[in-house]
Image (cartoon, rainbow, N blue to C red; front, side, top):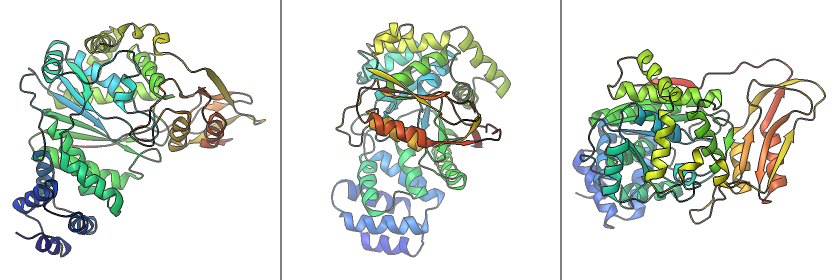
Length: 435
């Protein structure tokens, strides 16, 4: 088998076999196939796409390139929830504990953030003492005992994907639906869960900017999951404004805790309830939306969801008192009000999620390189969102700062808002479901 023949085959829009795809991935991972040949193949895929069978075989080949997590020691129904990422996305901190309180085993591996704000691990590490690097035995024991653990990914999961992504990043082939779908699903399948629920963000603050492309990605991932015998559902959700009000690591932890207490922002609370509902149905714990929705609300009202988060924090050596004492998280040196200085009442017509995320990163809530440290205490808390009425001198946002790039961040936050003198209707966060 020769790589040049496979490049020509894909260039001519012919289907690669399972054996050919495994030959490519194995050869590239062990250094026998050079970057320039794989670059040519990636460009052919970018223009010609891949069939569902090719996508599955690419996913499996990348999965087989490294370690697969064996969750057989965990008893019960295991589910993983993945988000393609967005500004203010702290859903795992709410959805995971609530699903665990409902009887699902949430054995989750997460990543760090690169860009606007931290990832799930960065948010959790803003809790003093929280350990994301527990052993496999402790991971299995914890999920068996309390139903949930969130840890960092092991270094050897899907090494082929890491190599391919680095190459895609410098060859203009990142925005390929088959390659994105296979990249995400190889990691999800390697993580070992029985069922997978995907949150595909759509809009200015997300990687997928329009619903058509997001739908293609969702359909591709669901197809791969189902062909791999993992029951998979993808939900397309709007990221035309930040999710919830808090953007910044410890600020998002506080908002997640408040949401588990039933006090979170309405849009965020409703989205979390929706995702737990999907998880309960996919896992067969509830027969329909009504039964699942009622069970989730019960776990919020009786505090069991909040207790699960506290248990997880305690098991992973964090200070569980943070549930009731937010001062444990520390705080920024200064909180600055950003006000609306117009002379007439208006409504928020637009709130640029990407710009808010970039403002938070300027303050130190995110990182541009993996080596950069994150300041967990800084960020932005929005006081007005799309559809809200704004009066003269109303505070539209609060900036939590330790003095880094504060002026620029404030300017960026104000520029993220667009106002209208006419009333604006709030839109639904759930755009589409792909099963």
